[in-house]
Image 1 (tube, each protein chain N blue to C red):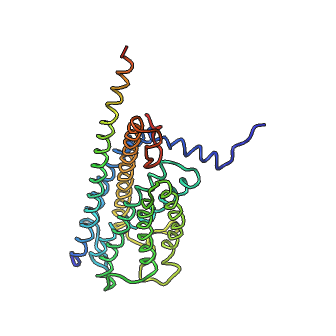
Image 2: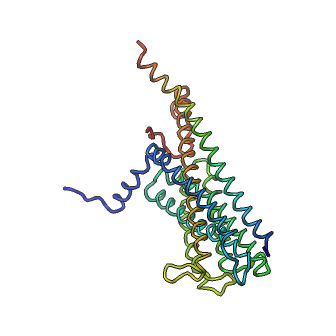
Image 3: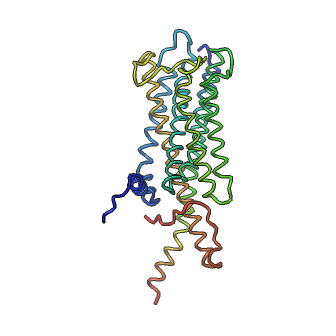
Length: 272
Length: 54
């Protein structure tokens, strides 16, 4: 009798094709320049355009230029956490070894861009609202996102046995994803000091195209930069894991079998 | 510019953090690549030696 594999099994097979660290290292090495150079060129172009060439706002004056770094940081804070949640799902359901490493690497980068989002928002809020901070729904939900990142970073490193840390952090990563729609819709669900979204999928942008274009260039450039940093960190993490495995195997030859300590996901079958 | 200190601080923080994260990732990758190469070199030599040894 021929058994048809379930959807979960087929999906797992698809993802595990990309779990081979050797294949990932080759793919990552090829991708790296295609992420890094567009990131540098587009980010520099977007920043120069936003700072010196785009017009000032009729109400906010030049402080609107903070938007060109604040909005991309906010976008990356949310999408970075979405990536973390996907890695958590891959880890919990399919025990994908690279997903655990990716989750470890996304945490600090995501927390950094969330901190930048909060700090630049505060620097924009002070001249416009007259205060550095208000406990408004958008600001508070992004602050919660920052704490979720910090909790994930702490939890994934909190256990002597790495696999337990990965499982616990994956549960937190998935549960924390509930904050993403709250961030997105907070300006509609509650009466907030933060302005509603200027760019939506369903309506025309409410800002001038003279401001929209540099914002898009900055956002695409920063997104490439985020991806480039993540790929570089993940490649380094895979290599470090291989070094640990090789050292453990060498120790295993000289010590009794079973003495070698497992220090991470098994990526030893990664020979190119 | 009317709010220059705020703009300079916002851009300074963002660019500074991007440089720190980017440089950190590049240095870490270089270090990991060097360590991996150093570890794989003897094992390849061992394998080559094992094949050619009588």
